[in-house]
Length: 423
Image 1 (cartoon, rainbow, N blue to C red):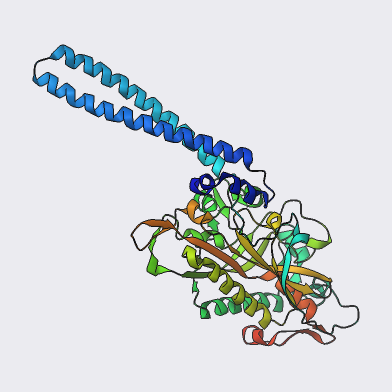
Image 2 (image 1 turned 90 degrees about the vertical axis):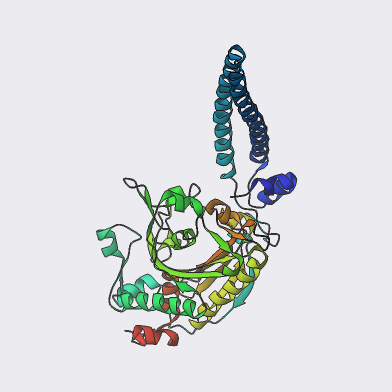
C-alpha cells in the first residue's frame, strides 16, 4: 500500500507513475488528499476539545473546594457538552480514516523508473536471450502426448477426482516432481535461503498483507466457513511471518525459501495456451523471499535474478529474461523480471518465474519495519521470486529432451530422480 507521504509529496508525479500501470489515478489521489486533510482537521479539533475538557474538569475540583457549587455545576454541563462533541468527532474521524484506508488500498504500487512503457505482454522488454536448442525427432510431441505415451501424467484422472487443471502425476512423473522440488530447495538453501514449511491456508490478514486481497480475491480458493484462503504462492505465508514485526538493521538481509502446492482459480482460462501443464488450478512451486533495507533492495533483486538464472541454466533449457512493462506488472510490484523457457514442440515461450521488488508497498500493509541508526522505525523492502514453478518447467523438459529412446533427464537431476531416462 502506498503511504500518504508518497502521494502528498508530489501529487502530479504520483498520478504520472500510476498512469504507467494503466491506472487513471487522479480522482482517487484527489479523494485521498481531501480525506487526509479532513482527518487532520478533525484530529486538531478533537485534540483541542479534549484539552478544553481536561482543563474544565480540573476547574470543577477547584470550584468545589472553594464551595462555589453553582459555578462547578455550570462547568460540569460544559464538560458534558465537550464529551458529546469529542465522541462525535471520534466517530467522524473513524469514518474518515476508514474511507481513507479504503481509497488507499485501491491504488497499485508505483512502478520503478526503468519499467518500460506499455499495456500488454507484447510490450515487455527482452533483456537477455539464451538460445540453447536441442535437436528433436521428426514431428516432436507436445508434453500432454508424451505424458500419455509414457504414462507419467494423467489429466483425465485428475478431471475425475477433482476437475480440469488438477493433474495426477504417476510413476516417473511423480518422481520427477519430487526431484525438481528437492533440487530447487537445495539450490536455494546453498545460496543462503533458510527453508521454511508454511501452512497452505492463510487468513484474510495474510492475504491483505501481501496484496492478494482485495485485488485477487476472485482468483483465490476460499474456505468460507473458516474464512481461510488456499495459498496462490508461498510468498503469502512466508512474507507474513514478519507481519507486525520490527527488525533491527543488523537483521538484514532476511532470506527464506519454501515449497508449497499453489492454488489458483484462473477463471476464464481456456484454449490451446492452457492445454496440459501450461495453466493449472493446482501446481507445485518453490519460492524465494527476501526482506531488505531500502538502500540495498535493488542490489538484492539483481542477486535474485542471477540466482534464478543459474537454476534455469543448469537445466539446459533455452530461456529469456524480460523486464515487464507497466501494464503487464502485478498490482504490488515496483519492478518485475519474468523468466521464460522455450517449448520446442509447442513453438512458444512458457513463463516459469517472476522475480519482483515490491519496495515498501507490502511492508506498509504488513507493518513490517526496522529500526534505523537513529532508532527510528522505517518500512523495510520486500522481494520474492519463483525458484521455480514446476508445471511449465516439466513441460519444457519433457518436450525439449525427447529422443527416439525416451525422454532424457538433465544431468543435475539424475541424483534426485535415480534414473536417466523416462522410457
